[in-house]
Length: 345
Image (cartoon, rainbow, N blue to C red):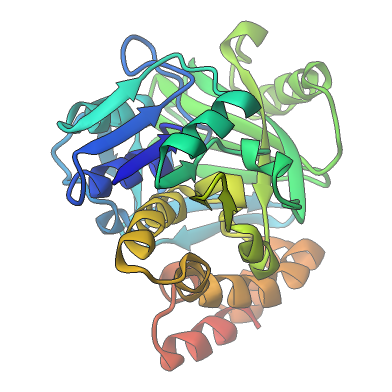
């Protein structure tokens, strides 16, 4: 059995790690390299870290962070998250790749449509974990419900007045993340609901950071991207056949971020593992993803209109308490669902 994986982020690494247990023929293609200054994603905070197939004594694990701060139009709101962790994603991914003993890793790989077709002809399972707007869009009708341009990077500045809590600042059309790694370094990211080019986003970020007494970074220190998200309908496109090969789309490529919060790395890793496990067991990948993500999508789908109307701080006031995300993030039991709905509504 040959399993080929295109994309070496959380989804691809999790898929390769599991695939090594079922076959000795695993190939992982990544457009970057697992050495030097590997670029991480914006945010670098995850919830439910125990869901990752990694322990807490690895490079890239920075510290616990079970509380964050949301700053909206009417002040600050404390947000409690389950098993929250701050990561240096680049270092974590380099370590993770180093643990893969039976995987052939091809770095700096530019996989285009022709190469993707070739891989499908040579593989039994091909996993597309190429992130937003993946290669598979050329073979399916995949589209996204939400696509917001972003600008992000890790910068050095004086974050002592914000450390240690990560925080999000909401504006009319923007969402600014600041995740301090230390009092002197943080990951910052700006998302916009409008379709703005990177140059305009950069000027907006400079202004917003200056307002909270953060020295704006140089433009060269930041990376442009797109934050995508989808509802349950997108899962109908997560699996297809190409050259008699089964293709599974995983992670950000299928838009598995939580629609209310934007956090998607845990979902990405889980989908990568599900892409392998469902194929090996002969089960439906679509059904497995649906089961993994149904309650999260259902609850956040109910909450999203309220969130966009009155903001996270407004929801907190309605709940008359700090927001507890533990139940609403990935509820497993009916009582959790009711608790999540009560939290938001």
